[in-house]
Amino acid sequence: MIHVVDPDFEKRLGEVGDRITVAIDQLIPPASGPEAQLMRAMRHGALGQGKRLRPFIAIEVGRMFGAQEKSLLRAAAALECVHAYSLIHDDLPCMDDDDIRRGQPTVHKAFDEATAVLAGDALLTLAFEIMASPETHRDAVMRCRLIERMAAAAGPRGMVGGQMIDMNPETGAEEPLQVLTRMQRLKTGAMISFAGEVGALLGGAQEHERQAIAGYTNDLGLAFQIVDDLLDVEGDAETLGKAVDKDREAGKVNFVTLLGVEGAQGQVRFLAAQAKQHLASFGNRATSLLQTVDFVLNRRH
Ligand code: GRG
Image (cartoon, rainbow, N blue to C red; front, side):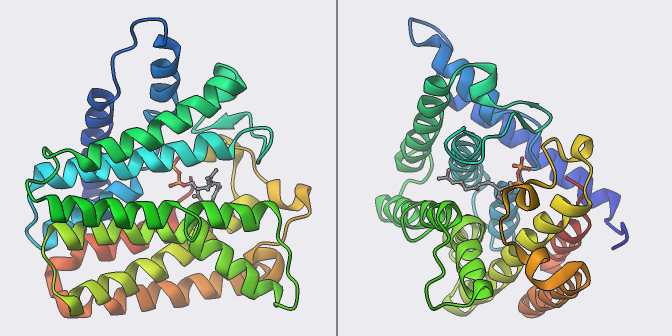
């Protein structure tokens, strides 16, 4: 795959990422009092060099539908806090046992395991506090809807359920590719789909528009995961900011082990084209979301 991402797009992604980083920094309580280590660990886990892809999708979808910037920024920050929690817990010795994340020591390495568990817990609960605040949206019904969708995306039939399958991939009668696809849809896909929902809900999108966004994020999420599996084989640990070849070393099935490198690349191209097709009715308004697909395809970290 070749690098064709527009530099203006990367600038836009960087600007949104910086605003999200500042917002999260302000939303995490100051590191003071006997619990100060917790806040330092939360910042370590949440403010590192992440791509901020999920908040970017939320904000760009919301902008397309004319949502209020302040609401978008806060809801997107909440979403990123959930993502940061998931990475901290995923890196723990009892899960993926990783030492490096985003090019720096994982939270349990920089602090200790108990602090990492608590920092993840605190980021998850902070996300709900942010979403429930009237500062995020004046309408309590909207806030409840956002909270309900975030809980569903992060919970047992979402990211945590997907992580359970990843930890214990009992296939039973199901084909490995079916189990893997379900695992991905829950573990990675649910939060990417929630990002689209945030923008569509806050922007007051109509049902058919919400459907189009859901189709887009569904395909984008799956493409994102397959690219992740390709990077695990072909990527460079320094650029990625984390260890590579993890799945092969752990004897885990992923899209590359099941489809082969060329098969996986072909599937990514197919999903990318389909994701773009879902946005056809939005015309030029969807330029940034179309470019997001290319960014995901060409990412090296
Ligand atoms: C522990 C409840 C719990 C869930 C963990 C998200 C997740 C579930 C685990 C992450 C492990 C992993 C490598 C998943 C594959 C795809 C993925 C989510 C990568 C990390 O997301 P990026 O690339 O990360 O958007 P940055 O650092 O850019 O934010």
